[in-house]
Image (cartoon, rainbow, N blue to C red; front, side, top):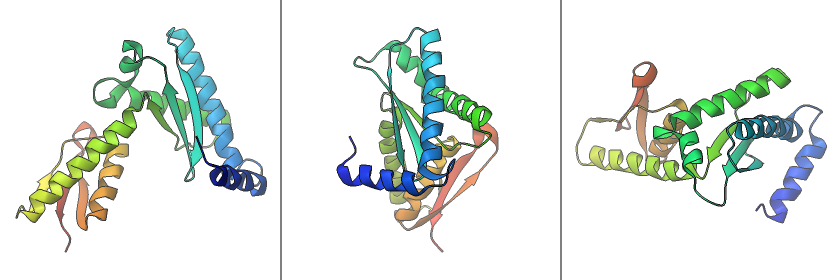
Length: 178
């Protein structure tokens, strides 16, 4: 639940944003995405609540349920692959409706939060290997969203990271800062 300061800030951003830009554009993006996702959930006969939040210049959409169901787990898929595909389809739905590219982030049952904790641990483990004398540490392949999180975590630890490889084999290599 956002606090009063956050709500007031969002109201000011919405009031001062030109039509179709800023917070109002992101809210419109969230509404379009939520409608699209509600239709998908109805088609799949899956119960879930959709929560929309605008923060840091992005729309965050979460699908939540009172009970953890296999259906929602299936929407995440192994390693978040289905979730990433749903996020991309949702972004395409927004693009189709608004003619604007979207950077919205979709989460299902808190998967992204749990994965972010894992990614921070992966970054920390790589940092420990560098401090122990490894020249570089290649990490497992991951999608662009997860690579961004790891790159940011590595930078905060004072190290360097670079993405290498193509397609499904694209991964991060961590090294000491020069």
